[in-house]
Length: 72
Image (cartoon, rainbow, N blue to C red):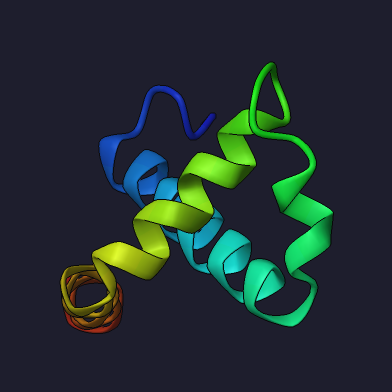
């Protein structure tokens, strides 16, 4: 089944994208800062969400991990 049709998989993919982009921007800031518009701007926006909302993103990662471990 595709991640588009399964809500839990879609949320997992989005959460992993946000965490990955934030990590890449912390290690290589110039890689994402050059591309703020267009298709590649999505990755820059995900990195900004991961940086600014990090407690909420961390909480969502914890909830998703518990959900995957115990309810799936």
